[in-house]
Image (cartoon, rainbow, N blue to C red; front, side):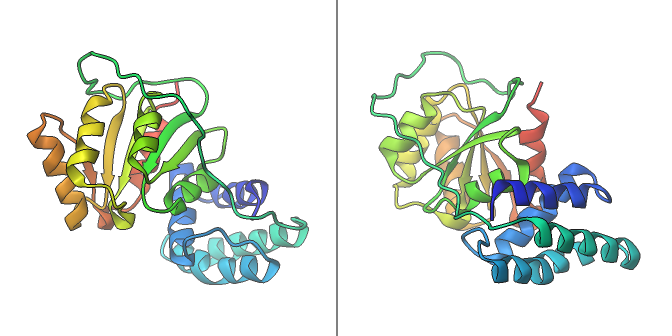
Length: 232
């Protein structure tokens, strides 16, 4: 599914839902779909008729739901050939350079897309973030290896997300050491109620770094709000 198709879908949802709610519904539907973005015509149709319809049915009454679904069907009918899955990678060969300064408690505001690092075994969470928010809002990278995480953190992303639902093979203590050295990024643990999420939070805490946690039953909306709210 191309970014343009998803953007048009989100625009349809925003006709009846606030933008954060529209993005949250789309993200949740993509999560239910699987680890990648629907690509073929049949997958797009199944996605709208299945996970997305189910998510919207919890948020909309019958008449608005019918109008939105009809609009989404129009998008699919005129979208043209979808593109392949997104690739979210960074290629940086230089060693990280850490700043010797106190950790910034509050997230800074910026103009332009908000830089986000996702620490996870796969790029699924990062792909969904970019898909539902758009390149004008978010500049997202996904990393699963410690050297890659350290290089990405050294570029001072505004927000770092540790996905405890998709944990890496990195030792928690080594990950916590890297997060502590990243003084200009705010780190959030998605799935803070899970064992891996709890371990990351505890390991950072004993190093003097307090991480924010978002439990899965709270929904991803809190993370989406964090990203959107950082735009100046």
